[in-house]
Length: 326
Image (tube, rainbow, N blue to C red; front, top):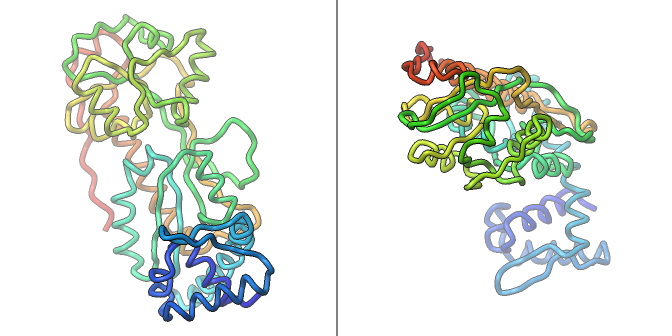
């Protein structure tokens, strides 16, 4: 199978439209259709179902996509590494981020990548940990930042940081905290939490099982900014990592308290496929995201108060300003 045919096939699989794919490949539409027909004839398989709504992969097409995606990614990696010999970082980098990371640091990280590395094309998406690991496995992503899963996964895993989970409520809520706030006290409050599909909820459920309580939220929201806004405007409370609460803490809408015990945390790691190299460009992007993430967690933690009733009446401290990355 010619390398060029693989490129044409994957582009059409991504665009799902012959006209758009031809434009992306800088060829005319009949030429692309002819090349796809040639590939189907060569393989003896129908690769696309054609309809008025566009092109969708058949079972054979999905199988071919899984097989050739890593090949094209390895070729792209080789091009990037050769360009790096001249001191340039270039090429396409595809990264996946769990929602709490994407919504807290991705805007600033993307802007930094664009400013520092104009020859890098960054493609970023957010999703659940399980989905992101599947995409790294299939070669759709160079790497992903995830909540460390409890089950063993086939990807190479690198620890990034531990982040505390904290109790959060409306800044001026008339909520009486116990003298010593422990995780099991969550059962005494009206809760808004992510759903059980969400990695953060899984972590909370594990702590709940250990504490011997059952979490029964009144609301379940997987969109974290919306969840934080509910906390800021109602008497519902939550338990989230600090970076998920960063904006709400900074603008004074929400206050947060530490649980008075150790071990209420989540682990963040970055993962990649063990048989595929991480390019210099991808590592440069990773360094920026990791630095921004650690700084965001540090900044957010400065707003968090001790888990005592007296602390709830104190003014939330504001962190010292830090200069932006040049």
